[in-house]
Amino acid sequence: MDPLIIGAIGVAILAVAALGLALRNRDTSTAIGQLSGETVKRDRKLDVPEPEAVAAGAVGRQVEAVGSARGRAALVAAESAPPVAYVPPDPETIGVARRQFLNRGILAMFGLGITSFGAASIGFLWPQNVSGFGSKVTVGRIPDIQAAIIAGGGFFYVPEGRMWVTEYPATAIEKASSQYGFYGQVEQGLNAGVTAIYQTCPHLGCRVPECLTSQWFECPCHGSQYNRVGEKKGGPAPRGMDRFPMEVNAANELIVDTATVIQGPAIGTNTTGQEAEGPNCISGAEEH
View (tube, rainbow, N blue to C red):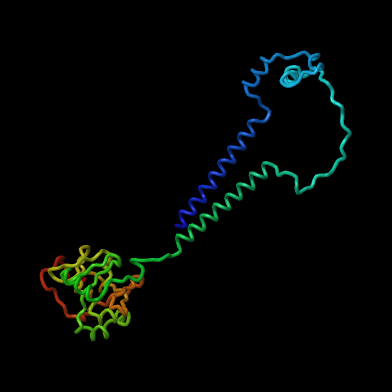
């Protein structure tokens, strides 16, 4: 069960217990030394016997009526019992005063509530089976990814990892190994013919869409442009698009670690030599 739900249930139980205790104390305090109007009215209607009748052996309600209505009347005196020797009470058996009980109860409930809240908070903050962005994402088998790139007109978007996956030419791997300072972290993906690019523009954080006509990435916010593998071609961005580490497992599946963002290549890096293949979707690609 979710730790938050457990903590909420614990706090609810404590609140109900505190409410019940408060109501009980209220009922007890208002009941001491008071008689209801109905009881007083009923006592007045009783046929109160004379003291002589009591002395003659009247019992039950008659005796009670005599005690309430004629409190000053003389009743039959009971024989006195011999005095009982005084025995000091055991301190451990002396009852706790009501104020002490309430204070201790309130402190105990506060302690339980804080403990429950703390446990729920720790359970919420503790990572449990994290998936999606911020973890390792299995994109799929390399042939399936390549087919998805072709079907997307040269671009394959993976929403689970907030990334674009595009084709990386085999002829550009040698340049990548010399120009990418992060080459070792992406080598397996590049050798498999793909690259994983973070969707966010490194300029001011806008999401960068693809441009099917130019076959570039073009940011609609401030006009930054990048080639198909995310290397900067124009605009105010301080570098190319950021990347994610890639690995390929034994099942030929691409695994992308979205918990680690690699800063994109420096301005001027151009490993593929790709220029715009058609009209740009965003104008103003000049350098700033």
